[in-house]
Image (spheres, rainbow, N blue to C red):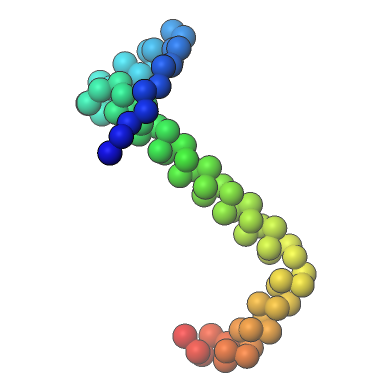
Length: 79
């Protein structure tokens, strides 16, 4: 597994936050930053899916099609 080197300029608030997170979670600053980036990605993907679901829920044609498919499949009795 290759890793990319990343340089981060941390102001006093970020530096303090990193120190706190390292003291709570253990590990290194690099591990804390990697974990934070992965968590931010998960949250961004979750939000994108939520926005897509909201968009689809307000799409009348999509809602009608979903109802047609549900009826065709036998409704909730099919499951």
